Image (cartoon, rainbow, N blue to C red; front, side, top):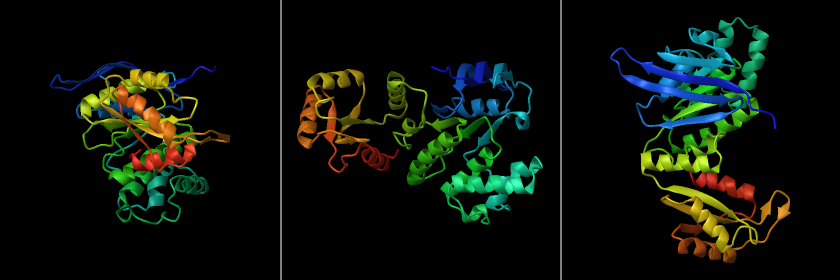
Length: 322
């Protein structure tokens, strides 16, 4: 297996302000090429400061930051292969969508033909074809966020940093942007680090669809931390295939995995995965629900989901704020 390349490496970095308040304490972190990494934490825990140090907007008090194998301590932001999109969008109000996206290329004195080609590609990527003449005041919150991200992406950074990009959006826009961010990141193959604020007002599933880092145990550990910080119940989806993962033994394994959670399990009877067909029905799903409830886990059999697992996941994303 090909070893993953470390694109950003934080080595014992700390940040102390003039009043001797240490806001970041000895962070060691490797971010891999092509990875979508989420940093989750409460206000004041140092998320934004960490991103700003990577981008070069804040000096590091101690430690080292390497990007693509080279230390960037003392390197100004414009010389780092990193771009940042802010929660406030930071769009130029007097410029059109086209000119906002093209701004970085114009500063670099890229030819007009190349600028047009790259801006057109970005407009297509963020699905804002035909909006190039509009000003930011004529856009919705989600559209402004996409323009902000496109402006950061057009310079082909090795790393894109997003500082609470969903915080200013309403629930529906937040759901949409989560999926669009992941889609854009996969298409472009860039490394993306995103900070999210842990709050009682945020979607319980906000961290789930935007992480490449966790295996199942690490993901559950993150869920436990999220529950500890927010107090919100966690919901899990269990794709049940009759004769494959519907026994009492399977229920015990699931119960052991979810031990210590205040959670709910949605059981999805699945009849099709890609081209393979299975036989799963409400009878087998209800039987498995009974196993779980005997083990103290609250569970529900989904009634409205289709038999196809892809359709099921799509509907769950819409219903469960993913």
